[in-house]
Length: 437
Image (cartoon, rainbow, N blue to C red; front, top):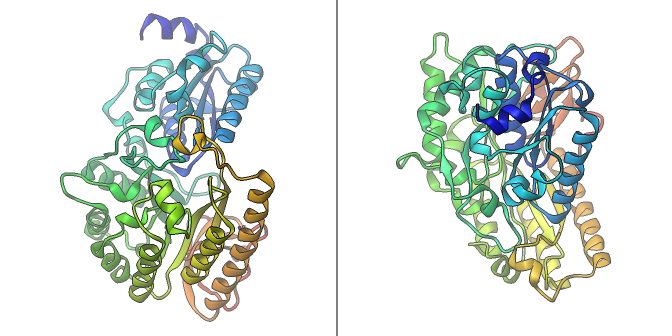
């Protein structure tokens, strides 16, 4: 361990063997934070509250200006509540403003995401191991049961080669990189053997996955082939694709999704961002609204039961009421089952933040409200269209199961975490708190 890390860690960090992780931001951050916890637990450490931890990891987010404010608040809170604990700050916000976070307190150590596993292994009092990078769950099969996840994320890609004018993530995360397919397949096999019922492939720009010419469809095919080769085959473990950009959905992917008979969930999250081609061009998104709707039509022709979520930014600089109306029209044409609505938030360091034609906050708020209402209506219509059909649902916890089409429904009280149920959606009841946005 280098001298600076040793001084920061102090004599009691490894001795106490208690850690706390504060996660902010996207699903990729969540998967990374779970991996940090798995590493520490594999060294004999136990999760604890901030007050009881000797080591704290804050995984930060900088996707919007508001997100970065929450990150600074979270780091300050961790410092206040954790006594003399070493506070490791990593993630997008830390990558952009390392000096700012290091200046908060002598206990703060900013660590680049690619170096966190090695740093934590040292801080935990042991040498880094090759398996600490991306393959943490292979060392000890993940138990299934109360308190353990039955749907697990696997990060296969990081970084982004695009530069949307509202986004800073390509700066914080760097160029797109892909994990070797062999590593991904081995991790998925280990999880399937341990009894995980659903594996969610994640990445910052997942559709850009490329391992020596093997694209996302090829990776999915390789994982399913490895499941089939097990004895007995892991046919009960299904795959889910998290957010994938529309320009990365190719014919091979569509064909595999259509032919997988639900082994790859017939549910996608396909970010639209705007239904106005003019706004998309100013966002530097590489497609038109017509391209997007056409892609959705191709997807639905191949996969009629597809459930489709999306992200939409309202109030982007210069957005007119006509642009907003075009977004609503596109949403109706695509029949989204879920719309995540984001009022545009200025992010320093991006071209859009410097524009003079910012939208009045009251207008942004009103458009967000109207689009959320439309999203709720479309979600209700999608749910109604599924009545009378059967879907496989994974029991996540007592009384709650997640359907293939990504609805949380009530599960029988005797169902156990990890069970895969055939749910008749004619009789299924949405779980309390099921999000309609």
